[in-house]
Image (cartoon, rainbow, N blue to C red):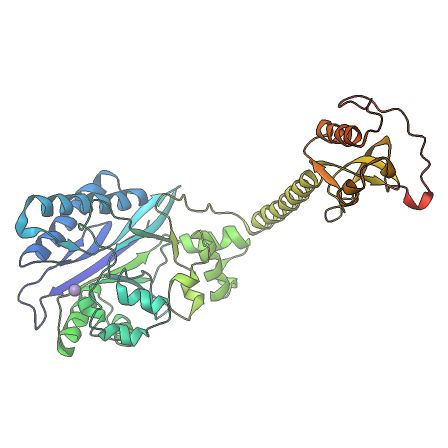
Length: 432
Ligand code: MN
């Protein structure tokens, strides 16, 4: 069994009149919420959101339940703001972390709306896991602003997503395998707008107790200026019941102790249902970045598979894909007919004039007509090949040509043609 140990701290800061942040520390569920709007609105929004989050998650304590809980919080805050004009326009961020069980495995699920953040400290390195839903953060992701510029940007408080400002919200959701020694940090922007990542990492490394680490983070942010409310929750993964070792053995067939840290990490990524999340997290240490998997809330996480099983599945997929591609081209190449010239003889071919890739057109039937029987104006079309959707349509076209040119028109759509008397020189024989 995983055991989580947590600590937390919150402070109004040095500038604001009241603390509109709220936090939640329960046995399996942790969250920070940073409220905004009006005199009292922000405080109400973050409190209602946290309360609803807890009640709703308790009824359905799994990954989908966490996403649903944020949606429920959204509805409650939205309804409240609609029914009370004093509270109109209020909203809140919610960043939540929960320990859940999926398919018999324990997982950490992180769900996020707004610009509060979840960070992971692993092997002493701090990595941000969530994306901010804010205007400046979108500019950072776009490459138009640096992380440092964003931290002090005057418009950094403008959110692109928040809980309670409309009747629906779409949280981001991440699933991660819990690993002993990992330390998670949930924080409102009052923390990371004051402190650089290196400062936060330093505190998280130095203070073993999560409560002391939380208090120290808040103290430093306040010392630095405390321009906003500061809220911090620190969660330690203190016991994974040997799951990481089992994972390595299951995947590699050898004891975890023989694996390098990097190999082990790669396998843990695979176990976590890794889909390549590197682009979504701006940290150049991809070795850690990939361990976090943003996924759609409704997605079922990838199942644990052995390495050879994955390889076989991959090869089978490639073969099926190639087969399907070959089949599609074959179908496309052969689905139609055209009327053209086989030497001097008007003939019906199956396929594409000139062929398609490696599929040459096939001679379907020769007609009794020669090119010279047709109106001269039709010859360029016949040389290029007149495409028809079916054999019957191609025969009908030949009949029309014969009619208009005054040639014998006993040729009927669907009828069997008498053998042609035309002799085709060997160099003009169609390829079979
Ligand atoms: Mn704030």
